[in-house]
Amino acid sequence: MTFRKWPALIALPLALALPGCISLGGEPPESLLTLSPETRAPVGAGAAAGPNRPVVAVMPIEAAAKLDVLRVPVAVSDTELAYLQEAFWVEKPARLFRGLLGEAIRARGNALVMDSDETVALATMTLRGNLIDMGYVAQDSAVVVRFDAIRIAGDGDTTTRRFEARETGVPAEGRAVGAAINRAANTVAGEVATWVAGS
Image (cartoon, helix red, strand yellow):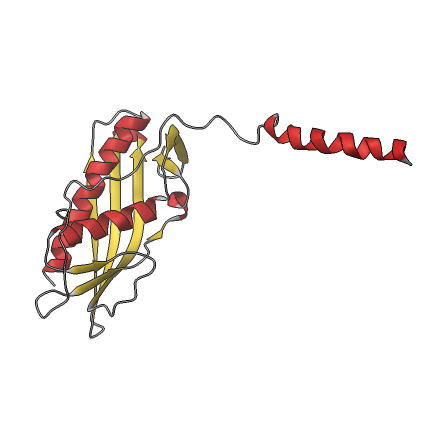
């Protein structure tokens, strides 16, 4: 009886050791891309809702299927899509862009912005939309950020508008593309913030 238990006792340490020897994926990337606001609200700045300060709820952003990944899409042609090598987002683009939108509106200082998943305040305005493009166009050596925004007022009045920013002359290299996308995304977010403030 004692002899038969040895194989099980030996197999357990071997099973525990195996995960350290098995690789289930490729090498981790050297760095990850993110979106960084060019304009931020001052540290310690707060806001309270009031007659001249609406509560803007920035809702989760929808995204095209090609953006529902941690990769940077590359439009090879009108009908072909690839992904840029060695370029990975730290989070999915729609979530990164939502945070950028919230900070762009907050930095203007004329609204109380709610842009987290735990938003509970009664919004006087809701911003949602669809991120159509946030990637690289190979034929033009360009990055493009395209966003269809939906602005819903407290009384239900709904307005839509498409925003787009493009930067050309960008080499097909991860860091260069990431930096150019960040600039284009900030341009779009700033234009959306101006649009929201002018409602």
